[in-house]
Image (cartoon, helix red, strand yellow):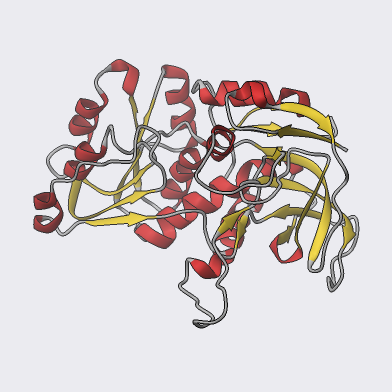
Length: 343
């Protein structure tokens, strides 16, 4: 089969399309004919090199949708040919603190396409337990563009921040896949949404997705724009992926009892925190990564109903994966780039 792979960490130049063996499903697994996958910032970080072990040569792609092509031993009730989308989260029990005892090894939290081989290939092997059937009227591209970003945004806003109707929500990096989903989730929840992005075109798209106010960081200094928009009363919830560059400003922008939810740190991981704001206003700083199986099903149910619509920047074949990495790295993508391996 053909796959987009890299043998070493580095720039997008390490990516190439090659013929590799078709994977065989083991016990509890299925082989998927991948019809669509999508690129995330996670793919950039894995390709550059994270302090984790990954299988090499590596196939990226945490999001994937397609048809079940073969089933492994012990898999029951999964018919070949069924259309599915794949939950990218593995071993969620680690997040929940489930431990098996001092003499039994505990599973470590993992993500498909990061700790395992992913979906930028004509075929992929995934756990049967991670499958969710696609309705006939939902395309593979829509499902693949939604998976990781929908569950991450859902977990951050609904599971961690527990947003309520009437609250004010600030979403940073709002042209990204997670953030553009978060804008819709917050709007659907009855919140008033402020989105930080770059450029007039991205601003128009975010307004179309439901943002009540859009801040264009190219029109002024982002910290000043946030201070002016949030005012002395502040916002109740912030969903942030920017990290270090905005962290002090975000802490100050929170209203009393406000919640700052972080799921990334694109500008650096050292956030300077004035603890006086934290204890005086009784703030909550919450971390979030991916989501539980229940979160995934809840978020995808909203996608299936058409209440959450992933923004697809464009679609490419396997030969376009390297260019997609370059485009995402340069910040020229609104939403997601979809990869269609059989294109």
